[in-house]
Image 1 (cartoon, helix red, strand yellow):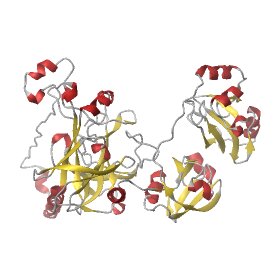
Image 2 (spheres, one colour):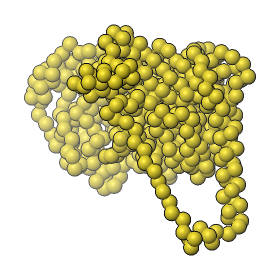
Image 3 (cartoon, rainbow, N blue to C red):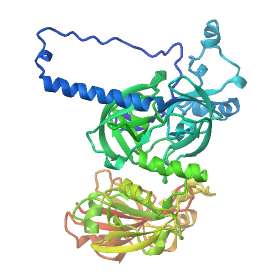
Image 4 (tube, rainbow, N blue to C red):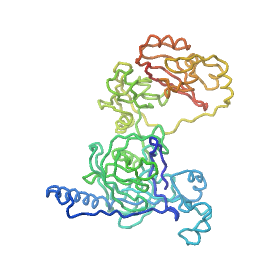
Length: 539
């Protein structure tokens, strides 16, 4: 299945490596020999006996790991039949997860390729099916298998092949897009299975092996180290605000087809499920990402027991803490998770007393370094449990007992607006604009027509509308054209009803000082807007 890509800086892309793209006759995988000459006078001859023994021990360890784990690794082949291909034809052409082998034939060469027989047969549209492949590993002797959600999602048929070449039809027991974990099962008994380790005790720099089926090369083993832990990888295909982005990063080679395979430590224990890569081409470029096995085990148990994931939630949306946020909160270090919003009026965090702009720094004494740290801590709690959450609120340390609720995975529904953009243009032309040179923004009053059009609440209607942001000003990429500033909440509390109010409040602040504003962002598409706090440093 074709990898989707994510921009990673200017040149890299994070891509789900869900399934192998079937190679076409015009795009075959290329191989080359690598030769190394060893001279009798090579420095290799000077390696000491203890060093040679140490290398031999390392080799023996790798061999033992492969002998132990490889029999439990499986190759997964998936098929989506024609009715699904028709529905997703545009997605397939634009880089969707699945891709038909015949669809790789360059346009205009269909008749030419037919002469090579069934291997390059171009079927009629109604006979076409999307096919792909990935990896997985058996976790119990009765045939439960862990893999990635994106390997099996939307597929009509799943087949599993073991290393001894036995093939089975598999049933999808459950899948969870928020963690990209899926469980499938094959019927039988006494299957070889892996040992699941503890990713929490693993450390950066430790050896790991990746085993899977990259590029149709079944049961390939690659070696590397843990390059980083708790890596946040954003904007993966299909991701949502509920998605957990907490990955183990490795430089063990991972390619399309490796998805769902195990990442194994030096003791032969699985510590992760290989899931994504960072690459400018969709192929290995040195950066691979695996889902921590601790998270995968929790998801697996829920899927087997309930058929779905039942995850506890605090009921907040979160942002990473920026330097200005940390300073405003009274933190000496830049860490924690900033409360950016709530799941609704029934949010357990909101009911407990948390507020916008609070920085969560610990849960039951466990320190929170960043957003995915908080996600990792909360995933070990069950629905209905109470967690003691410690926050910093503009220099004050506060604790709240939050009774966790079940996470809502349904995305918010956006309501289409009946108003046209011309109404906004008329509103913009109807009010004078004032420059705030200190922040680099242009402000005006909120026109009544704009307030009606975008359902701006009463408190925000009395604020000032951000009409434009100067690229070289401190507000660039912090404020936007759909923002309405309501008030200053740090270091003073003051309602902002006019541009002059903001000018006067900022005039008494020193250069380099941080100010935090309460902002309402209306939805240009007509949906419900949201409140947030925004910290900014006075230049």
